[in-house]
Length: 428
Image (cartoon, rainbow, N blue to C red; front, side, top):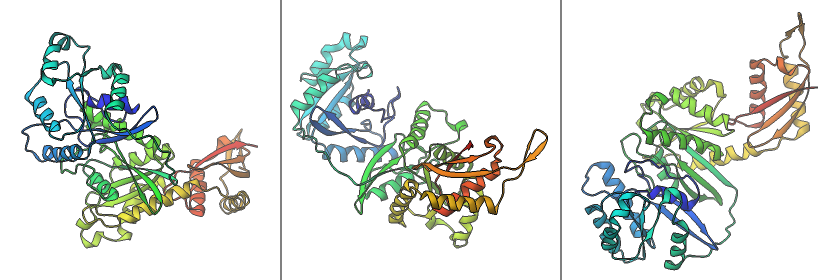
């Protein structure tokens, strides 16, 4: 029909997953639309379905009812390239019973079908409608003007927030991300289903805890590339990966019964490549046998699976029992603060000389000789994520193992656990 395409046009961002098959949207999305001096929340809903009684359809329709009751008005859209159906009639009747303002639109009016059957839409709606072609950005200005005239839009207020922390929830399908998201937000915002792949869009929601604003982003479950066949799932996977470009912290959700897998390692690698700190949430902790409910057991599991990332912090959680949910906020804030820290230059240089003195770099073979690597100084060139410059006599000769050693020393000394550290070596 094109609801999600229209949503993306109005919010001026590719927020909702769009595909040319029905039923792509499952969780509703809410985004702020800025128009002239006004600001209003726009909700992209799941497609209305009639007669389906399966678990997922029932949950989708529950959310649909919630959105209808909470909304101040509606944009009713018909699909201009297909015949009107009983479903259109059911939905129109449903929203008219709300006794709230309605704007009527017909999308895809550029199609041959609409041009041949325009009269049917006029008779069905019995109201003037806005003709649109959302994919081509046609009719948007008229729609926004109509929204302004039809609804009592509030003028935008410039709100002052404390430091905002953007937190992405990722993991393989069905590890419990949406349940945790609902716990963090304190509401049933996400559809929770035993069916893997229920979440398709990335969903942003904010919450304030102890005067700190967090924006949580729930993403589609990431499968191995070889298992991503459907176009919708490919779009969802790309969207989830793009999410990391806007995130400060990644909460990687693991199923405690399954433990870490290769795909989890790839997710962490994607995050570190983008300078994003990582915290591991070991979910469904309540289902573990007693012998696996120990820190020592999970230190070994996490240490082995993520050995290339040096001691990523982890926490036991249970979305079902709301175990340690408040600690997630504390960890996210801690990761953000440590990533942003600016290290005292003199202290950094003092520590650096101690590290290279304690463990010298192996000699470098060059021009038939074994040359000594000499380190001169270090400085912090960037924070969030932390980056450093080190001046040496032979930058090209730095051994990977020694580079890892220096990064680990910086991480251990300055609390960068789970945070990627970069070192750029320059000749002096």
